[in-house]
Length: 310
Image (cartoon, rainbow, N blue to C red):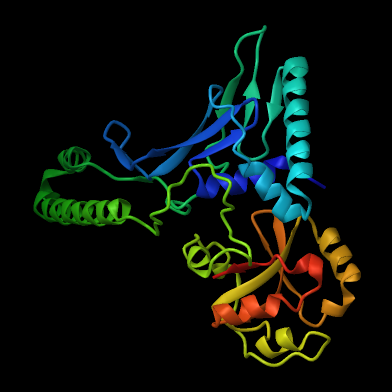
């Protein structure tokens, strides 16, 4: 079943602006790591999602994602996106609230301007996994020292010194971790007609520059030749290799089973994995990027527009 929320959530991982045609744009703002001295908490860096109703021009980013994943034409995808946004705006006007999946929701009260509220963990990003933590201040440690019995002062004083040194070491270490840039691409993170994950027809250089978010879900296994109707795939195998030939992204295990039934000749090659609510199907792995591109031409015509991901 088509759900625009999944496409928007995926695009927001890699883009700082995703336009909802004729409505507005979801904009991701970087918020650096910071220390709250009053609460004694070091806050991790994050991206905060806001909504800007002034940016309405359709740049085709969502429609491109829908067309690629759902396997439909670009024009059909644009119509689906427009219909879904119209339905969401109608629900907002009638019920006063409409949800955007795990990203957030809009609220409108008594005819006022709609207000978008994002969830704290609605969209994962390059800072995923970093969490806030509490860090005791030297003043707190000194106050604790002052409340101890005088007979234990020499030992307590040494403990305070060690704890203070440990706190400083932790603070310096976390400052280094939180200020060191993670994986970064020189490409601008703006909404664009160009898909985030390139297809087999795109240039090899552009495909290798894309962000990778699939590799951690795979294990390593011994590569072996697979017997079947597609010798080029069989020769590559699907157990080992840096790059993956992904042929489908589906919404549920039921859709995966339906895909397998519709393409039984690919059964010996098919492998699947789940990632962020989607179910992906790949049929080959290899360290040879060009070999995967060449093998894709042997697939049935409707499946040759594969994704090559590392």
